[in-house]
Image (cartoon, rainbow over all chains, first blue to last red):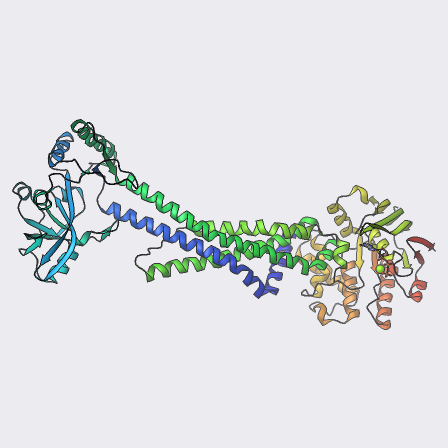
Length: 395
Length: 226
Ligand SMILES: Nc1ncnc2c1ncn2[C@@H]1O[C@H](COP(=O)(O)OP(=O)(O)OP(=O)(O)O)[C@@H](O)[C@H]1O
Ligand SMILES: [Mg+2]
């Protein structure tokens, strides 16, 4: 009953000062909304990256020369085409190791041209990656063996160069050399910042001649199952270690890539949310301030309540509820604003895929309640400890 | 039977800018159940200070004070609040009603701190308002009532918890003579018909003369208690 009364009195007090209550909540509203929006953007970005990486294929292992660390310079490759065969044999899946030798080149058809990524690959690519061909076919082993000048083009590039007409069988110029288009990829979108729909795949041997390079950049393997990823990694590295005892190679899995990117995005999200949380703190100071005003305004009421039997904690509770109501109502409004803002943002900007998770509003609500308790407790205690005689005498 | 209120050689001094002001310099007074006493004396003599002590709103600097038979020195602030709730009803010169609250809820308020449920609180508050002749103004707010009506509501609030003693510090101080007389008549009636002890501070000698007992305070000391 005492709690119910404290609740009723607190609500009455807030309603009696509607505008003041709302203005006081504003700091909390803005703080909570900012936190919710920033967390949603961070989560959305992370999810987008995950989708992209997982969209490449399942159970992938990428082998690259050098130590793969954030910020370390790319190492000049020592990998050779023959190494792919060796790894394939060691794994008992010859011909299942995708290779890549990529470079930027200008691609032309008639008067149209585009500067894009030209990737020298082998027939293992569709086995390893999710890379469906919409029309025509992918590269064959004989194309690689005979260094045939054929190309499979991305859907976007096909649109750019051919503008709707059929690319199959046409000759395009890649870095000044003529290639015949034998296939067009399905649209797959971009991943990790590269537009995969504008790529051109040519046989790796043709690429080596075109780029004047005997090496390849990287291999990609697909483990038969998730459990075997680690085995595949080890085997690939062991083969390379035997052949190049003095060199270092890395074999990274999708989980490792995601782990790294996830950590970066997570850190970024945390930092941004923490900055936003500062405004929540400022809002809390505002609540503290207005609660002190409220206590002063109602000093005589406090004196009267104590005179007729209210205990210290009855009064403290009453003001604490008032403070917590201010911040939690502000928190709920802030969550509504934040969720609405997140949805509006991702609707308005395709590159901002905000995702509202269940925990960020829950956390925001908890934090705003905690802010109310933290910043309300000093004014509330001051109210509770007022001397009734002094309180009754104030004007 | 123990006395309702008992002060034994109580003093009360205040520290003011390093100076000690002795508001009460050693007062002994006993209020029996059913008493009707008027406290009189010049301004600044310590009447309000004495009332605050008797009502357990304040504690004596030295001396012993018993409220409802219990030494306040043995009680924590919260226990004292409970004792006040159970035994004392206060009536103030300035009414001290809550402005945004109806007469009924103003009167019911002390019962919150007794742990009673709302329907029971309201039932008793209605009764108390009936007793002071304000049963027809339950939903009025203080601002919609005259001064005399407000003081009646305040008296109902003091009565609602069935106290042993009603302490009234200049209850007619803010009222004109006629309404003041009505309020006094009400207090007398409550005393004679319901047996509530009434202690009231007044400047009105006529009022004081009608009391069964007159406690005269001067300069922090009891001058006459008769
Ligand atoms: N909180 C206080 N701090 C300092 N001095 C105080 C305090 N309260 C009362 N006094 C002093 O104690 C003395 C007695 O005050 P009190 O209010 O009891 O007088 P009173 O008899 O009620 O006067 P009045 O008839 O004007 O109401 C006064 O001199 C007053 O200034
Ligand atoms: Mg006085």
